[in-house]
Image (cartoon, rainbow, N blue to C red; front, side):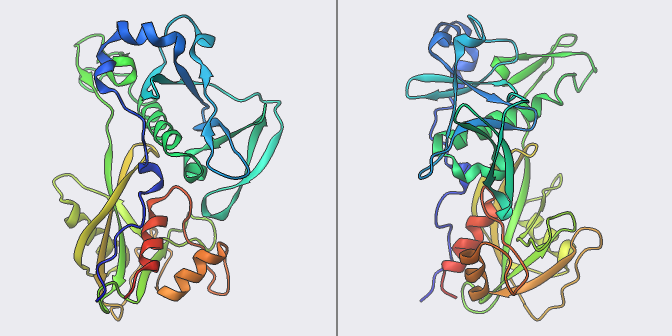
Length: 330
């Protein structure tokens, strides 16, 4: 007898194996003492980092020696954690504008033109998150999330005065009233809706937003509202976006999605495929039920075929949700 499907593997951005070493953020003497042996992850204004990308095997962050940036952590340095007894930090940095470029495949099956210098490629998390090894994916997710937060955390939410970084990038403190703020994460649900045939259904509900590249389809998602449960958000979002009522809502897994500061909470649910689909005007351009064998073929193909659609790939949790459902029995 079939069982409800589960994720085949952890989502691409949930594989972190570095120690976040939270207690060290309040230990400046210890962090400064270890700075000479620390490593630094550079990140440019587009969220790209230099990486070693072998022909076979995962990509790894191309870190720099910390002493190249001074005798102690600069004010804008953010402590990311420890890996193999070495502290890791993030700092802003840009590739050489005169550097040559290279083309590399990434999210949605698209090709990206990226800076290529010194045997390194500057890659971003959204387009290439699944290429990185577990340690690099975790460090990069943390660095991007903190960087995005700091871009909007320069002033106090209570009195409007300037705020300065404390705890080596993990908080800010108002210079006027002393209020402390910490990085925020916005919860969002993402739900794979299958039909109510058998345990796992025979079809999956896919939709596309009008701003996506042509032919791209995925599962439905939306932000959790104030005072709302996660399960309640799933029911509401599916109803609002395609006019379908779902049941059997169950949790699958989660991953950070720092664009700019979300965590994606994955769910599965079922619905009647005979019910009319009513895509939300301005939000959903098209929605359709797709049989399992067509989803499997789309994964094998990777590009648009006769069905006219491409599935999400790469760093999105939607990829492993759809892959796991496609591999399951009805």
